[in-house]
Length: 361
Image (cartoon, rainbow, N blue to C red):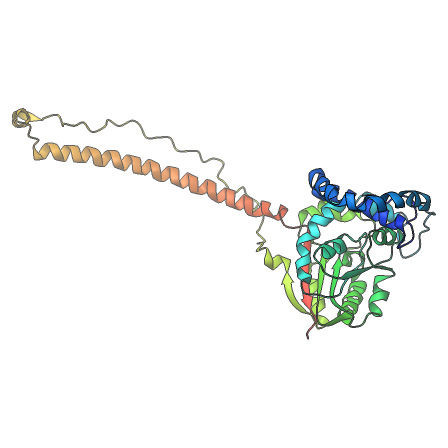
């Protein structure tokens, strides 16, 4: 949802509550679909309708145009347009939903550079107390309008004043906005702000993801560079934080070489079936006067049986040889598919790397 070009009503007013209800309903439609949102609306609207109606006029009167936001040296002019116009909030919600479990059991979580509070919304639904810090005023107003506790401040300055306050810190897509000195300072300040036993989770674009490299990273006007999760983990160790989770190791990925030659012999073909062999006839045609006489009495001579056995043996041998050539070709094709799939899986790797560390108790 794009932020409207208006100022939010004051906190605690009926207008603010009305607006929060409207945004929550719209978010439910977007994330869950029309049907689920309709059910929730029918269940909650009758009891809240009077308050919503009473706040409507006040909300409309309170919505005033936003003043132009001047750029400064610490932000990019027009960054709010990116935050609300180019980022897919529904996708961000689905992408971060599995990460909330890292903070189960935490009592006070901080999201660094929380933006429009997508992850804070996930934590709130999970019953985890959390707050955020964000420098962009438009994002702060939007998140506060949804009822979240957000400090409008530089994240690094905020962390410097939060020694030992939090038992959980979530840092998503922030490190790539900093140079290496900034990342070093950020990790040191996160270690400073964590309580003993507290957990920190870093999420950032994975440099091993082809999709991140080609499709997403450079859309953000403030991205500086990629950081490999091994590097972030190593820097965390330098500040005494113990690694607990590394997404590369968790997903079992394997880096495979790209072969210069195709993995399949292009000249090879599927073997032709063997020339038709006469099926061994039974009963065996008699050879000689003695066998013809024995046949009259329904008796097959040992020599005739040996001829029958030899014919069967030859027939089976030809079929086995053909089957072996077919199996060899099948094995070659399966090997080519496995080789190509191993390379192709690099496209399936997650766009984001995740590192979880803990401050020793």
